Image (cartoon, helix red, strand yellow):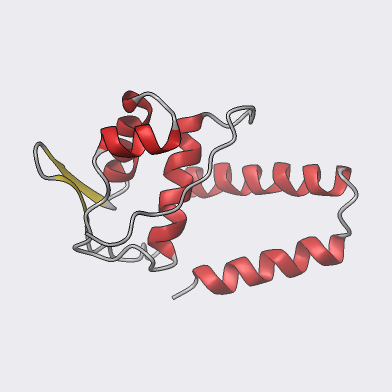
Length: 131
């Protein structure tokens, strides 16, 4: 197994904890820190490490399995799969994600973060995510 992924959660966030965990793992997957063939920590172990209920972690793992990132099997755990880059995003899903990005951008601007800084951060993130 690869080194356990570092994930941080904010229990006071409006984003559900299971989504925070899935988002953190997805970032590791997209950026190549978790590679096909790697085993993720067992659900119960990650739950203990994060201080959450094991069902919360299990829901995160199932979410990533539904996206094609993981193969879940009893007694073996969560195996990272080789995943083809989607040719084109499903329109509804892409629209929802862009709305979330717009909301986060509005939050940043409301917090006083200059537009130039937001744009630079988005460019860096996009360049890091692209193959």
